[in-house]
Image 1 (spheres, rainbow, N blue to C red):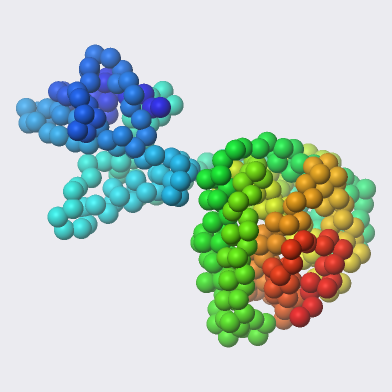
Image 2: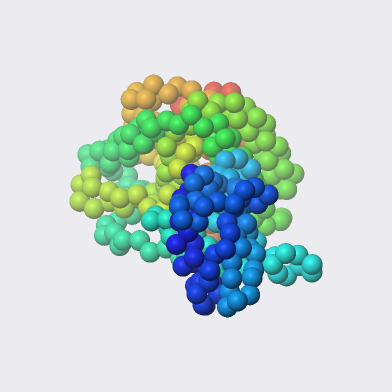
Length: 364
C-alpha cells in the first residue's frame, strides 16, 4: 500500500504547474472525498484518485493513478514504469485522446517526483576491478590445462547458484511470466530467431520455425512447475562474472527479473563449457568436459534437483541460439554452428537431459 501525503502531493503539483497550488478535494474516482488534513489512507496500486485544485485562481481536475503489479506483464517496477512512460509520451499524439499532464514516481520517503520531461533513463553502478571469467576459459582453450584454481572457481560458481537458488518463492504468476518471456521476449527465443538473417548455410527458416514450435510445447510443460520458482541471476555467463585474486568474484548485469527457473542460470554457464569444447576439440572433451562435469555434479549433489534435467531443455535451446547466431558470434565455423543447431533440435525432443550424452546431441 502506497502512502499519499497531502503536503507532498501539493509540493509535487506546484512543481508541475510552476506555481503554488491549492488542493481543494481528493478522493477515489467515483468514491467519497478524503480528509486532506490526514495522510490519504488506503491509497493503493491501480486505484485512480480525482484531485481538484486551484492554479492561480483557475480550478482544474486531474486524475492520479498507479498500476496493479501482478500479472499481465506488469509484475516488475520496470514493466509498470515503461508502460506509464509510454502513455505519457503517446496520449497527446492521438486525436481526441485525453492528455497526460505528467508521469512521475513515488520515492522511498513518500514524495512524488516528476520524470515527465525525461527523454532517456540511465543507470550508474560501481566500477569493479578484475578479469572476466571468459579469460580463464580462453587460457584453458589455448593451454589445454585445468589448474586447481580453475576447478575451484568452477565449483565456486556452481556453489553460488546453489546458494541463490535456495531462496524460493510461491509465485505462479512470476514463474509463468519468466517461462513466457523465455519464448516471447525480444531477448528470448523468438527475438533471437527473428534476428537470424535469411539464407544461412547452417540452418534454414523451416528449421528455425520447427525449433520455435518445439519451444512452445515446452512452455506448456514447464508452466505448471511453479514450485521451482527461485531467486535467479538471469544472465549468468562468463562475460558477466568478474574475478579478482583467487575465489573473489562479482557478478554483473542481472537480467529479466528477480525470480524464475534455476535452469536459466545453470544452462547459461554450462553451455559455455560445451561452446569452448566445440571450439577446441569439435565436441565436449578434455578440459571443458571436466569443468562441465564438475559444475553440474556439484550443483546436483548439493541441491538434489534431479528435476532440473527435465526442464533445462528449452533453456539450452535459448542459449544455443545465442551462441550459434551470426549476429552475436560472427566468426564461428559452419561446422560448429551446425553442431549447435543439432544440439538445439535434439535436446528439445528428449524428456530427460542426459549429461553424458552430449556428443550424441551434436549429430543430425
